Length: 204
Image: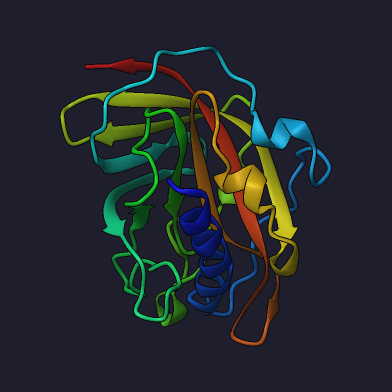
């Protein structure tokens, strides 16, 4: 992704994801990741794995928190912010289609709601409960399964979003999962929860 479009996406992501997370439920517990701005946030630990070819994600599984969700594609909204999944009872995660696909070199970005209005819990309701070493599985359109190991899990203030750590170029395949977090503020939440993960293996 080009630097300019990455910055634009980051700014839109922090704002529009928060706006879509209303619903009256509190977010999960605070993170246990490294201090804000640390180098390990941009380079989560994990076994080295060979990068995969481009293939769109169709399903995401996170056994530690009970996530098993189809993955939709997200682009940019008319106002220039990133799209977010619709607020529906059948909540799904969404992959930002201008980021690498899971397993390609660079940060693949998947977003989801923590709450979905009157429908209750969102697909990423318990994202902040993940811990280092937990497994994330992305099933791809071409039949390949990309396995990721969780690194840092961070809760950051909406106004202090770590743009470069989240969306900056990386030398290996990585994954970013993003949702709302922290205390409620008006119709949304004050913070974002960000999971950093690295590719640990794959199967075809």
